[in-house]
Image (cartoon, rainbow, N blue to C red; front, top):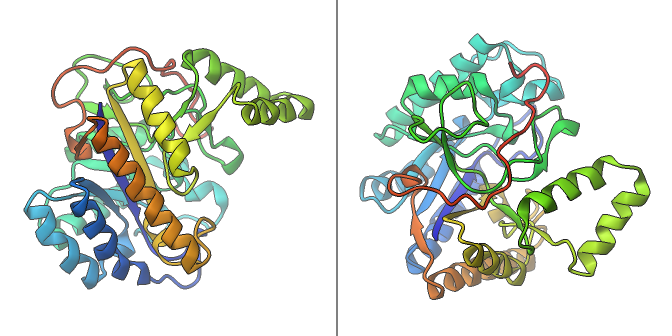
Length: 335
């Protein structure tokens, strides 16, 4: 099994459309990058427009990228990426909901900035707030990207005006835009979902059960919580922001036993500064976060899980077929 680490390397401001944008967390990237290097891991940093203007980040990562010790990709937050022609409302925080020409202009502008600032051509992309759709994929293909990692496995973002990925599994697949949910063996792009999975053998059945429970009356939603506490239905997100080291280690073991080929661990760079995100509020939380991250990386290495850069996903070999169905409905307006 291969391990991919993707970091949303983004501004400090957690909520979209903040009147003031800062990038102080860029100073903490060197610390976590040293952690990755000490654990022999290759991270992929997905960079937003404000962070690409931060000189500290450039000094930290540009040479590391050239040396092959990390990867620089694109993370497009529409609200901080020019041109700014949309109104400030929740729907427009999702790239997939913008007019196609405006979404393309933002992606093209950020792509050019990353090339200029880091001296590299990015090949991996993640949409801000997971707001991805067919029109976004078509722009990626035109710009020469290889990998999209905008899908969060088994997650429905429709309540936030985003896409429904609740039936998309964690296994990567090749595809040809605009058919972003249809696996094609010779597709020019790879979808590498952010990993979430179950401590159960039948992922397809578990995904359908969770989707039904979350959309059913409240009594069924409560039943889902009871099942999770009894370990009958355990859904775990592979992120130290959302799960403990023990939970993530259990997920790695379960997915490796089932024959999955890849896992994609992810988090946000503002989490490295206490108080910027809901996940780390104190210095003690941060120490726990970093300890959990290191523990999972060591567990992966001790179990023969090989770290790779996101751009190399599916570069050789083929994906296992044990993932849940790669079917989902795009959000309204994502075209």
